[in-house]
Image 1 (cartoon, rainbow, N blue to C red):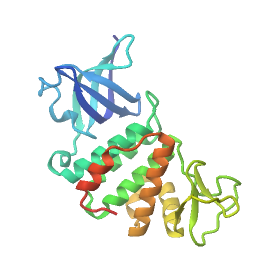
Image 2 (cartoon, rainbow, N blue to C red):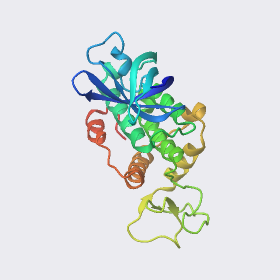
Image 3 (cartoon, helix red, strand yellow):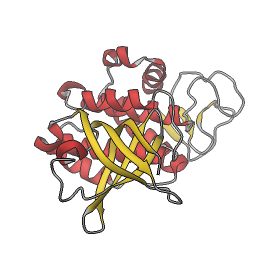
Length: 252
């Protein structure tokens, strides 16, 4: 079983058999992967708070021949977000981000920029004035990085520019906005202001992301649209949504 040492972010930790914990992690070197932390329930010295959600860690482990699960022998904590234990609202948001990321990410395939996005999100979840903006940016950029869209520059059907007048129609199954000629009944609709903000957000670097400000209407429309995209293209519904909306202090 060849050993390895790699940096990762904790996306999940759940009980596995009597003494072990099953971890879901993501890192730039190995992509998303799962490993068994042997004896983690009994060894607080080796693991402890290192297994908290969204913690940035260095993992020491080995591959188990013939298994998709790695063996995690030890973890060094590199960055911890203490609010995850102290603030229920923060914990709810962390659960949401971790579940969303787990759904977007393929197994064992690194995606350039995804770890940077996860760290930026974790570091900004406690920003009370922009909590909802942080989630919208994470949702949008994670979908784009994972290849799920949405396309917002031109009509996804014919390639023409879309007039920013009245409601903008979005064909979720086709992957983006559509012009009036390609539209049809029953499509998702957003205001031009929401489209403009999503376009800006899609192109913003993480260093400049804090400059973006959504109206309450745009936050709500973007949330509904991006969750619809996630559900359709990732193929699962988020179990953490109910927990998030029950405990969130600042809802859009």
